[in-house]
Length: 162
Image (cartoon, rainbow, N blue to C red; front, side, top):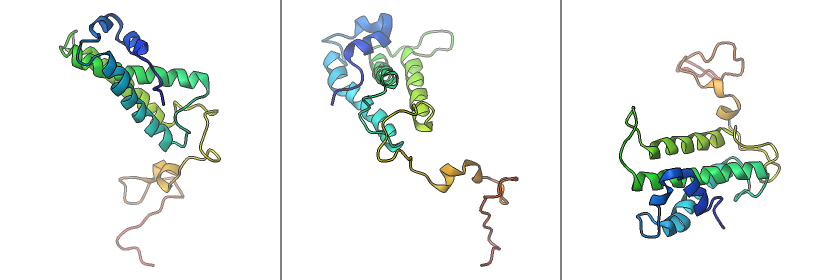
């Protein structure tokens, strides 16, 4: 199983800093190809699998391109953090923090399902796992009496008798 991205994609994400990633750097090019990219792909595939998709994803092409970019971004963030750990810029942030934030935002979209196209290949009939909380997200409330206006809210208090 090959990762969604390749070494060239990671170097593309690193931009001008790509020259720091060599065969002798730490991490080196082999580390990226054989360890970082598969690790990041595993994290992506774990999320997609929990959403009911067949992994590794092979179609549609547009979705596969986004996964390739996300895979390269995650590996690029880890490389940048190891090779260039110093802060720069007005808010003293690092390039790796910026890349990592973009990567995590992409993972969050996949977790929410907003980044998954309708024509992605699903397991079985394509139905995602459901629970009361996922079907009725507003049912969880700090209010003891439930969310006002929600007639499906189960309200169980200590004084409820059966």
